[in-house]
Length: 475
Image (cartoon, rainbow, N blue to C red; front, top):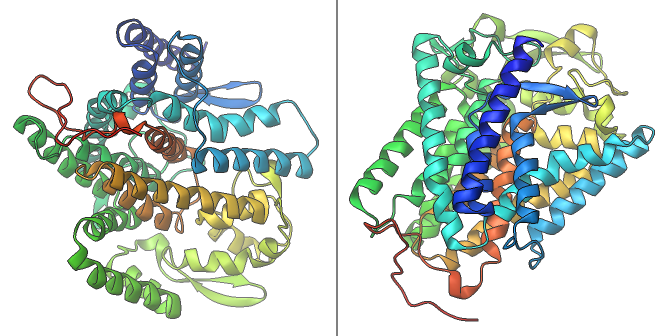
């Protein structure tokens, strides 16, 4: 047994034992929620091959937790359907159809589609069937968020990745260099393969801090929640990734839009102006970002790449725009179901119609746009379903704002996913943070079907129980 395999078994057993203890003491739902959150601490490169697929600890914990939930005497599997349930089912079916059409059928295709899309979603969906379940997850998520953020800060300032020191070095095949830097700071990658993947994880978990920052909650919990929010922001900054930092600020802009009607027009006009400038002057906007926010290093200076027989200037920033030109022909021929998983695994993807030279392929090999990558992999059916899945998550969070009018948690989720959807224009949808995104969508779906008599503000009193600050309604 190799040391990497031994580490995987040790971590997996530790997580399963933790789940079992919580299962006995707290029940299936809280055990599922807490164990999955704890598994987010484990570096994504701690995995082993099973039947040709790389299996990480998150997947193992989610499978065991869901099985434990299904046999639990009070586990409620059949619940009303939501938009999110529909779209997650459709995208799994599109995945199945795309892979079968592009490649010959084999038994692992449905398991891969289920594990990639449905498993993390169901792990979140089953964990929430009561407001108490939501409350029980908050301290686990905030604690994990703080630990990961502190690890990121330590790595950025000292150059030492604490998680690597514990479980072993991450592979370098698909990630940034181990000592990649920007603005003179080391780019922290934490428990992920790439710094931007790490920052996206933190961005998706940030709203849980607002589960503690709530008027009426105990003072020390509010202080802890506020400090956790600050540490999380610094953790995102430790990746020195511009997109997630901007998305963090967008989250507060969306929260302000939701909370303060007087600011809506001003913020909406400002955001519209920014989007319009980027859309009408994309090259100038990218040059501005590269010069003022890019921190471009030697490897990111302007070079020439050949696209469709023409020389085009390349920088690390404007590469996101060049993707559309480099993969334009491949996108036009992607059809309804794309090229499938097999041909789009690895970078550059092994797909036809790439109109670039060998040198250019190496410069533009990463498809740093989730929507482009999904189109290449699953075609226009995949693109449409994936986009609707994200939009339905934002819409569900906005609807929950009305059901939980005094809680900042759901406005924060709405803002976080809005920023996240925009960040996906600069990075492919990697499972490092994709697992958390789908888990969060499952959480939203679980909250969306809560009966009206269970809807109450997420307020902690001094005894740690829920305190209702407005009359419950029935319906």
